[in-house]
Image (tube, rainbow, N blue to C red; front, side, top):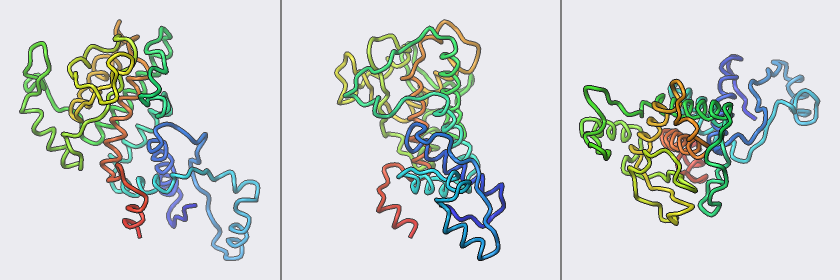
Length: 284
């Protein structure tokens, strides 16, 4: 339970942020219909005691609560983000992306192999997939971690193969470091099943150590390259009018973009790979 001595609107914003942070912490929406607002406690001491005594027993009170064993970490994420409106919007956008479409993290484990069909002919599914990708990439943009390139300063100097332009990559790595993110770090880009995914992935041929090269073809991709992949999907396949490429999108593309955004948000909050004991020391 959070006791917030503030106005209703601010209290509701805090509660909603904690719930959104819990979604991205878990990597998919665990809690159905999370609380969207809080309730006011009486200024009268006797009434407050009655409320606390019956908090989890009285009809009309206990329905306001939800439970998740990692909620304290979600509170920590919200606390880190609270003074940064762009980060708050990034968290809400990514949470909404997960609410729109997602898969469970354990279904992406290499031991699971290919769990889902890679593509579908269902038109409505194409729209949901595109919305989820757009929201996840927009979360990356809120962090000012998109690729900043233009016709005058293109991102690549390569012909046929992708080679970063130093004029783009240098400042890009600088923005990542400023956000507390090592640009040389790699992220597993999940690639499963037959080779019918978007061809842009072929730019990175470094397979992850758990890949078998056939069913599991996950790649180890540097942070700048993963963001570039995400932007490619958004720019060429989801943000504008659909094309013949659209039906090549599926759950693996959604998962990859969401996982990149998730890594960036948690890193920005200084909570990536943070142990519980570290949190206790930080907030004690």
